[in-house]
Picture (cartoon, helix red, strand yellow):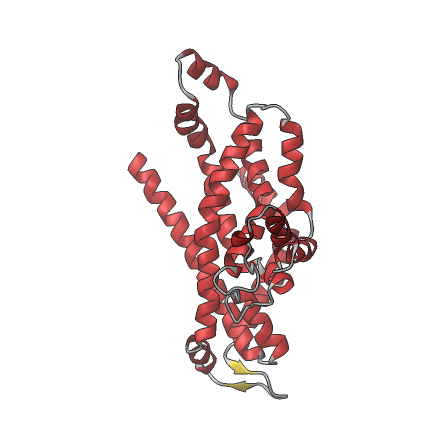
Length: 293
């Protein structure tokens, strides 16, 4: 009996040091952040203000605009990244001509630093940049836009760069899963005369379902809390506030305006919003599984 209990506890003992470090880094930091959100710490002495910081943040239209921009980025990037990741993973799995070179080309942007990519694309997408220069040479001047200087276009230019950078991770993730699918399944489908589209719909996508769901959660978390560098390097939240996202809002409040109480409060709200979206995603996943069963 004791040996059985010891065997069950043993894995957790190995994980204990890592768990303690994670609790100290994340849980302690969040509790400290949550506590500070109820204080005004912009002065030398912290003053308890209750929910005043939350009322101020919720009443700030700039905060809601920045959060809306995050949601726009999620709505656009989520389906695009998933669809193209599946397609490119399938093409690589089918060993199309030059597939090794394509694999490197697709994954290479993911390993570049965001600052490098941001600076490079800033030169490409400025009004007098490389892209508009090429369009003018091709007598397509009517397509030349102020890609980063127009409030209507800037956020979609930013989204394009994010997709170009993040696509490689999804492709390799799904491609790795496809490598573990038994080839007998595809061989049997080929004998039965299954078309390429039916192969994709009825065999490949169901086999990739769990990885796609995991990747969808990663995308949501990334688009809410890991796109600060793109905005900071390429647009600085502009023009106006058209590309201002929640992370950049927090950064400006903390380090440009010295409003740490507002930054702490906005950070807590962003964390809660992220948890809610991830929770909704898992709820929808369970509901789909119940319907299928």
